Each structure stands twice: as C-alpha cells, then as structure tokens.
Length: 380
Image (cartoon, rainbow, N blue to C red; front, side, top):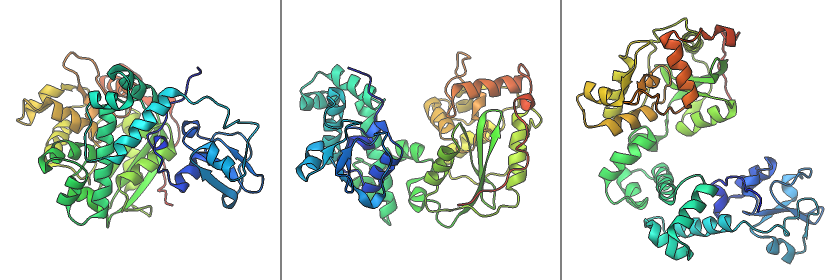
C-alpha cells in the first residue's frame, strides 16, 4: 500500500464545515482525501479534494461525506482522480472512527486500553496508527481535543468556571496547571481574545527566515520566526482573535530594525518594551531570561533556581516554550543540563545558529541578508 500523507485532525471528523471543505478543495489538500468528496452541478461529476481538475465556482459545488451519497443523487465519479476506486487506508479509517468516538463524548478521557478494545485492535496497533496518521499519540490527541473545547467554551461564555467544567476538566486547578501554559495567558484573559487591542505588525526577511514583529502602542507583543509569511500572520491572528490587527504603530519600524540588527550581529543588547499577557510564573521566568548575558547560556535548572523555584524545572521549560516574543525574551539561551541545545519553538537549527552568533563562532548574518531594513506595517 502506498504511503498516505499525514492527515489533519480536522479531516478525521464528520462535522467539517462547508467553508473548511471548500478551502481544502481550493488548496487541493491531499490530507482531506477520504474525508469527503465534492460534486459539481454543471458537469454532474464528483471528485476527491486533491483532484487536479480545474476548480469550479463555489455556487456549483456540493459536498458529500462518501462517494455513495454523491452517486445516489446522480453524480458520476471523476475519471482523473477516481474517487470511488481507491482502496481506503485501513489505519486512516481506524483513526477516523476513534476520533469520532472521542468527539462524541468529549467529557470522558479514554485510556489506551479502552480505545484498543473499542477498535478491536491491540494497544500498540492503535498507538502506531495515531502516530502515523496524525503524528501524535492517542493521549496527546485527547489533550488537544480537550484544550480545543476549552478555547471554544471560553470564547462563548462570560464566566470561566462553567467553561472549564464543560470542557471536561475535573477541576479548575488542573486547568491552571496545564491549560494556562498552552493558552499563554490565564483562561479569563484568553476568553477576552485581545478585545480592545490594536496590533500593528510587519513581516520581513531575516537571516533566519521570515521574521514577524507585532506591537501595540505599549510595546512588542509578538515575535516569531518561520518560513511561511502566511502561516506567521495566521498564528498572530489566532493568538489575538478579538484584537484589531493592522493600522499604524509609529515605533514598530524601529523595533523591527533593532531585531534585524541583532540577527546580523550588530545589536547585542535587544532592550525593547514588551506588552505581553502572562501568568505570574511566566513573567518570572521571562524576566530571568532577559538577564542572561549575551553570549552566555543557562540550564533549565539554573533558571529555576534563579527565580527561587529549584524544583520547577519542567515548568520553566514550558514557560520557555510559550514565550511569545522570540529573541526579545532570549529563551534560546536556555539549554539542557548536559550542554546540548535542547528544544526550541522555532526549530533547533535556528537555536543553534543564534547561539553560534552570540558566541562569536559564526560570522554575522549580514552576508546572508540584505535589505529589509525599512519594514512597513501591514494591514488587512
């Protein structure tokens, strides 16, 4: 059997919205093959989402969960993509069935053994199928499902406590131990979604790929690195769904230039004002990170000791992972106890290059980057 591309969690649910299905069709997204088919009224033909045929008008399209449903109302299978002739991948079908079962009872956590019995497979088979299809374990998928429901509940309710229990958490303390780290702020602050904030942003090329810098009138609120500008902007909008993204910020261009100078080895002291939402613990950690001298590193344990919480090594690591302002809060200067670089939200290769830049063992980034010193704010 040929390799099947990794499937998105959304593609495994039967409750895909028409808008999401249409986006998958426009993108010819192979990950949604098997999740649904689309039919074109003007031609009487139905296809897989990844079909290479010319895209029809949206008004001519209908969606069906299975080929048989399209054929039942008179549509014929496309001869190019052959949506009805492909043998379904058994592991994709297995994971889809289990994901639907989990979505049907979101307030219940199923252990691996229970999932295996439900599927009629062995525990190792279920774990292997989840990792191959989704790239995560069954437990990680359930945690993500629960967190997604919490986010939805927080956005739709005025009070935090009902949202916590509707999302299936057994206690509020559990949320404040785990979900706060994932949300990057308290549940109450997340529920506001950045309401009332005006955020300007710029995306420019840098020695480490695309650089996004976003700021309010008070200071920098988001800095991220990546290879895809659209994905960086989407991450910003997901972080602040209720904020007004766009408009002018007089100081933004200067702040972007300062970050670029740092990446070029010409600005060792990146002292920019911040406007970030964080728990008290996260603020402690991020403040400690800003005190690590340029060119030096600390272990997670050393940072934990520096804030008076020597046993909170894992919590320090989570706070580093949730840092929303890369480079300005230099979480790349925190390494593993054995001296290895450890993880980094923006990729271990970028972390390695940053540490080499600061230690002087690598030439400045000016040769690898030119221009982009006059960024402009972007708005949509």
